[in-house]
Length: 466
Image (cartoon, rainbow, N blue to C red; front, side, top):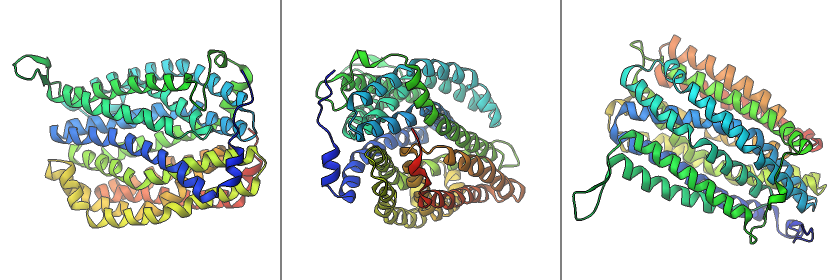
């Protein structure tokens, strides 16, 4: 393969850091919003069906998150190494790292599928689900597991594209994925009749129609991502020779991605343990209204942090490229500038969440009990958005530098210990309900935002070896 590809380094030197961050973040933001729309649309459809269906969707979101955390074992290392190689001008090596990273996806994907099939019955029991609620959740999870390989392939490919500074390709893929998800989910949930006749093309499948739509969308996304990877017009443009198992590359990827995946696993364990707290807030056992209120709230919270994540992902790319080019001071400025550009938005969303919580819940679910449980807690959640923005940007920037061990420690401390213990004490022991449980979420976010600020501003991460 020819190595005389166009270098992006000159553009990094010419354009200002703020402008670079903005134009890298905009397509990522579009990608994040499209990802949000998939989950939001699923929640909205389930809200028209009932509390049990919303509970199944909520549990599935957490389990899908577990799958993505496992795939981050590859994804985090991929974006860090690809961006470092690209920033150093070693473009062919960056492509080889991308191809070798994708080679690992089938192995991880099979393990994820088998794991989720086994855990499909265990997760609902841990949340005290019974009867029809449990049946719906188990069936939903098992179908959803079938799409996780395709979701993982898309995730790793998107990481490679971001490493070379191409934020547009993942955006295109997610646009198609969204359209497929909405179309198939609606058709399968409510059924489809041939216009002008009574012929039933697709019978109404209820909540199972939602997961069929999501799985179909994952398959289409992975297919389109593969086409873009091999396209000669693509900046990444891998070939078949770039694929294969390579011991040194696997070790480089896993050395960075391992702590990130463990950190993600700690995050999942903490959040799922917190979900178990939510399922025990009612003295009468599992309360579908409280569970639905929790999931609606955390899903809507994404409107606050998605733009922040976009700037964080853009910062990760620029940090990695700057370190690869030996520009250490520039690398330090990247995260701080990214944070400045999105703090105002976090403050704005805090105000909107607080002021319009009743109207938001009224639109999101047809059961008034969900709003009664959710509105006070959602107003409390609004107060945590600025610390959350600080946390997200600095974590992304550190991962872009390959510094994944400190975030792992913070995730273990905050997600697993603080969030769960404080949430249980206030929500269950003091009987403060969902409002009390979400005090634990706030304590976690505030603590980790302080620790991440200390780490990033200290600057020791610039010497991290990848």
